[in-house]
Image (tube, chains in turn brown, cyan):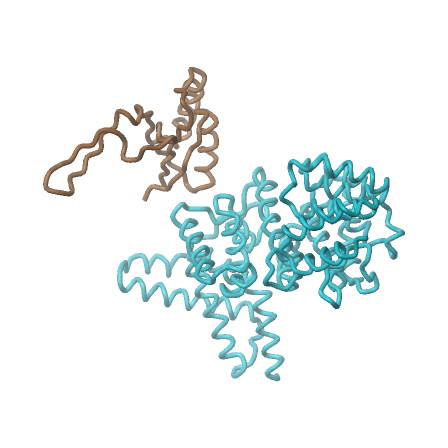
Length: 107
Length: 410
């Protein structure tokens, strides 16, 4: 089963070198243990473009679809047999990147 | 067998077998929904058949078999619509059971799943009362003064999350066990406390149904985990509080404080059982947790035949021990109440006043202050404190006694 770990950014600073190093250590470990599927950091919401092509022509809107002080700053997709394992990994991930992490099952 | 005997057999089977049937079916079919529905259908069938056919020699086995058939019927019906292969796999799944965790009972898996930390606390309480205790949705809704539909949704949502997020159906590993057990105990204590001092103004002040249910669940967990000190501690605590239940509300509907209770009305069998558990934990020599200390405090109270015989220095010493474990202001408030008996109301009041920042919205803080101020003869301040306590308290029996105390002030 796969889970999405959304990393929630809720202050102004970017990742510090210490956080980056801790994330690298965490990534190496979950790769070695076979949990790692994919992970990435995201550019700031101000660089986002929202596209809506449900109508006659595609509409482009500058900026994120939701303006919020808390936003998605990165994510992991991990493989875990159940939520207990996923939550344990998410707790370590949250510590490593020093941010809140939301865990959601992938259907 | 008379109708009454059959009725009693069904009630007993419901108490003893409900959780076992739900647990066995959840294990077999991997689905709480199917297990719950099939268990309910099996009991409904028992209500229909047992008066006619007689009570089967092994009610538990009868109920499990009947429930399993109901579940298979339901899966067949549903699978006719979709996946035939899944049906075959479900029906002929003879895989050996998974190795069990440190404790070997299906019901424990059920309890730990229902009390999983990824579920909201209200959902854990509702799910545990439904799936483990076998209370119906209307019964639970009444107990917690919520709409049936809202409570039903809470349970449905929790079951859906368990399934979709794959909350595992197992006893946690030895390493995770202590924290997970304390989560389970917290759910039971919540149920018990709601019964012990109902929060709402529109309900009985003391709810024997809820305290009894919490004790029944605690006994079950105690039987499943006899070596766990906190499980024993919580059971002892509940027994020693429950023993005083009939003495806690007066004929006129007032809550009666510990020092004014008719000690002859206390239940000596429950007290003896509680004391046995406390002695067992003391003999273990293992450092006690929170519930064990609270149980010991209640053991001191229930050992005194007269309130004047209470060993207050022992009570305060136990609270000191509890403060080190749990430095919350509520524990400090309770310690101050005991301190009043040992060192007098003046010393206690100073300790209580230090808690104002943290407890200004907590009615026992104001009730305690009011009582201490009354004992010190500060009527005007006592009256203001009673006013505030009455304003904040929800429990009818408590409001009544606070009002009388206020009105008796000189």
